[in-house]
Length: 101
Image (spheres, rainbow, N blue to C red):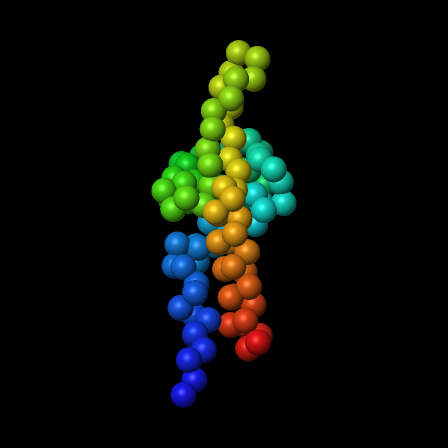
């Protein structure tokens, strides 16, 4: 009897959104990034980025913090430790599914 887990079962549906994948991919390469920089890099609207960041934050994938820059408050996003681990696992499972390994 084959008890190997089907790789599709390990793919959380929260991460299937192309925008959320792009956000996680961008955050994977940096320690943290500012909202405006992320928005510009992804070419999406402010409301769309806010919505997607909220989903990822609720899932524990990212951390959001507000920092003071001169006289302005800046929003920063970063992958949480759990988020980094879950995203790496997601990528591994996606690779297994795509390449049958």
